[in-house]
Amino acid sequence: MSPAEILDTGLADAAQELRARQVPFAFATIVRTAGATAAKPGAKALLSADGTIVHGWLGGGCTRGAVKRAALKALQSGAPQLISVAPEDLLAEKGIAPGDTVDGTHFARNGCPSRGTVDIFIEPCLPMPALVVMGTSPVAQALSTLAQQFHWSVSATIAPETASAQQTFIVIATQGQGDLDALKAALSGEARYVAFVGSGRKFATLAQKLHSLGIGPDKTGRVNAPAGLDLGAVTPEEIALSILAQLLRVRRAETVAADG
Image (tube, rainbow, N blue to C red; front, side):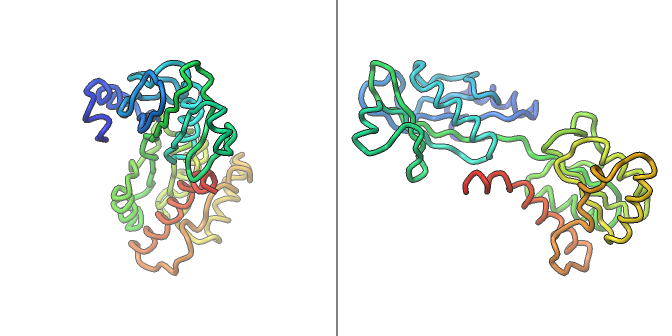
């Protein structure tokens, strides 16, 4: 639980409800004000996935547009945002234009008559990504154990609600026990990542069988085979680590791109 939730029971209850539903949301906290502003430092709000305020208060409409845009960016990138909403003439005095980002702070124009400045920190709260580990092989067992330590929601089967979710990652570690059926199930949706534990030659043979069943190269081409980064892994635990490293790289790719 974050400090924002501890200080506001209603905020904590609203956040818990959204977490239970596995939907993204964000916290917004006013960290500094200058001049005349309706809300003061410490004011908090909970923002839904579309950037609208569902609980709490950040003042009037002067900050609403900037907060919404920053919340959407935070939820898309997974990175916190710090915005400063200030009168345009004050920004001009500092040589800053609305829309500029300087030293990690994004500046927006405050067009309200109050002419105050409000600095707001926005923290995204994203559901844990779903990792489906198919199979009972030693690699599957090692990966399932390891992934939970890195905040992945691990399951052994593809649930209907996660089959096409873009935050679903699937690793097929059946290793000869139902490989083809597992691949068919994994490729039936639009998971963000699908990997096969096995040699590239073995997967190529399985891919040909999938093609004969009407699953085209556009689908089989999405499969990472062999699974994991090339770390020279040998033991099941080492192979699981190499797969988790690749999962992490894919998971963080959007954040890195946004920061760049």
